[in-house]
Image 1 (cartoon, helix red, strand yellow):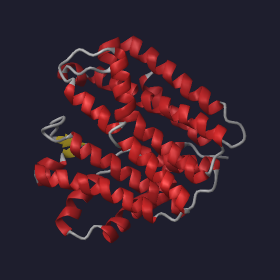
Image 2 (image 1 turned 30 degrees about the vertical axis):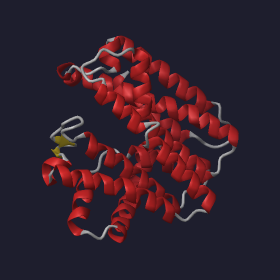
Image 3 (image 1 turned 45 degrees about the horizontal axis):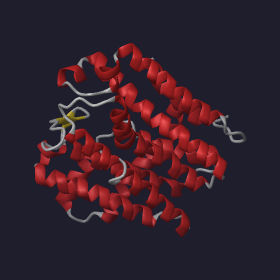
Length: 284
């Protein structure tokens, strides 16, 4: 019987952390730069994106050690985005996950370079992964597209250029699909690529992942709204735009789309992927 995601995390995260630490030591030689990079990658967090990648591989195939390096690369890209998001020119946050933001600890220029280092070395790690060339190329394509100017960078650009302006729901949804959902979607599709799923399964996983990623942002907006954070910052979010109850209804609608897509896949045991819906119970 397949584990739920909490139990799965307990099994795989030690190997993921070891992979990050060892490979960082092998590929980053500058000691102080490495310290700045490790500072943000080592603070932890949910590791949701690599967990989704590894869960997808485990659900559709056999999880081997080779899958951990692409999962680690994905976490590096996510961490780079957080370092840069916190910069004064972007979101101007002093803290991240309960500790000083990278630029407050090491300086703004050093934080930019630490982020640059994480982003770049992630693709080196993908190139070194133990898969055939076609799979490695596909993994690079998925991650670079999700993190690049058609998705995550575009979403962040929209965010900073519309700050203080009134935007509509379509603009907000497009921005969050790019800024947040794209990288979550790439995690699942990278896992699907490693597991060599068939075309029909890949299409269903694409719909599942897109809606799961959007739901993740809606849930985050609801939590921030209930804590008073986003109303204080006067940010445009699903909760501030729609109101709390309508945002919760929109979350339910989005989760239904994700669940329907996942349930359309027959054959493999998808208990593990299905268990990720438990994450949203606290905000529904």
